[in-house]
Length: 463
Image 1 (tube, rainbow, N blue to C red):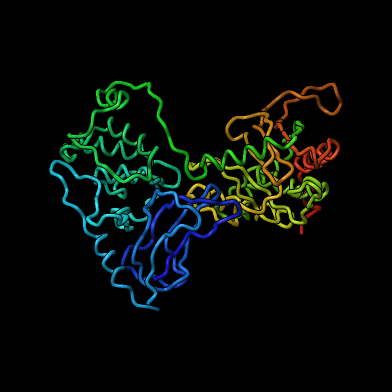
Image 2: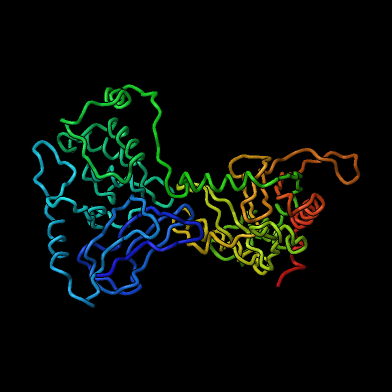
């Protein structure tokens, strides 16, 4: 019997949330075959088995937080016979106590000291690969709902909590809801509490439930509750990971630089390119690929912004490759994947890679390689209506850029007398003052702005 433990999934990662099992107890698994999917504060990763054999026991269920080094599963490899005691313990683990009348209670086990095991069939309820969160799966299980039947309104076909609640309302309106199930209003409150304890064993709500808390009582009575809802931070929003990262950023002595960029030439060029019949079908040619390419070229001219400070702060590592990270807001929180070697990529190649990363981030399927190795970051706050920002450096990087929304504003023409309408975009830079001085940051900003304002200059650096 081999114990399959959670290995280190990335630098500094100490724990992961178990998202789903791809196997159940009794399944045969091949060496390097996929076993489960886990999510750290940085990425979602599929874990493969180092052994070939039969899965004897799954030690955790989806939604559990597993520490690095903890046992995920027991796998019988056939190299040695199981001890009779181990077999007896496995049989005892499957013996469930009778259910009390009036409602299904959380399962208990006949053998004292034997921890419950969980199979993927317990968690999936036939919904297969439906994209949703563990808390929403928990809610669906309480009502016996197959998530495949729930119309999804979230990004990428993700089933949201509101989708399940709306489905429950429809069932109750049609008179098909199971007898004794709580109302949708009570389900809303139950879902909120489940978010605070998504890893706990399910305890279905029934008529004999304990007295409701004030907030739950108000919800059940159809009244709006003003009580705060506690939501446990998980995944990308994992509390301690965010605290560590923001603490590291706050310790950096920042300084900032802001400027505005004339966008008329790039706006005209993009319109012509988007109308070009030779543009590959499905290409999303936004401004961001041009910004990323311009950053790649400008960073080659100002290498101290494409650098990392050593842990002892005694040296600076100037990177030869330019890996530009792009801050993305997803249903799972903020994530910063990066595009590798943008200095050698065309604008079209950058656009294609950007689309791939956006799709992977939305589906919560970014790999460790996607989110590691960044050397510079761009945050496009203009997509949410922002103009200026004071962005914080993403350590160990030493510089970051935020681009704002484009506005049509009056500006003087080159003669200095005529006022003309211009497309203006704001740009904000933040840097680590231990590595970057004001002259270098201003020099980089000027180089980047010139590439954007005169996009024809990008042609001079094609490879």
